[in-house]
Image (tube, rainbow, N blue to C red; front, side, top):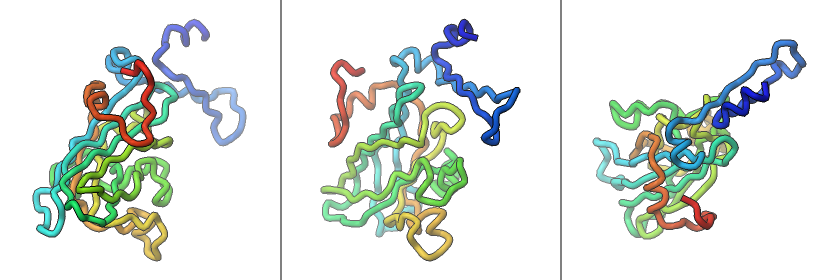
Length: 219
């Protein structure tokens, strides 16, 4: 068994004991990183999401464009995210929710992206892609954050799913109605994109964000 593991340096082998009890036949889960990217980019996976507004955007809503970038070291790194959006009014003070949704289907605009990505079937805001609320500064949303529960690899990967920007603030599940526990009563979807795998270039060309730790010699 040791020889097998040594021959598979890019595969994480996790042992799961079902139902909390010991078993003579434990389930062996194999989590494999995307290749060749994980080899080419020093065991790091990168993702990008090119945000565009919906085609039938009401005149009252801003035309938000930009990028949401992702980076994660395989197999145990925490997913890092850079939100870099523009197109909002310079004096805009409206907090807007941003969330990852289940489907990367934008065939009918952001509406076909489905519900929040919720693999554990829990109430909002406990979904791994609940990014939170953001207020622009001089028309720009520029934020670095970490998503400890989301992944770019394995069975719960967010690659191929969608990022959606909403018109309103997320009530963080504190509302009195059922919709609060599903989406946070965030109103209409006004911009979105599909998360795709990419090279390190976009991440590297973006200037460091507040709170981002830049490692010396990091690619």
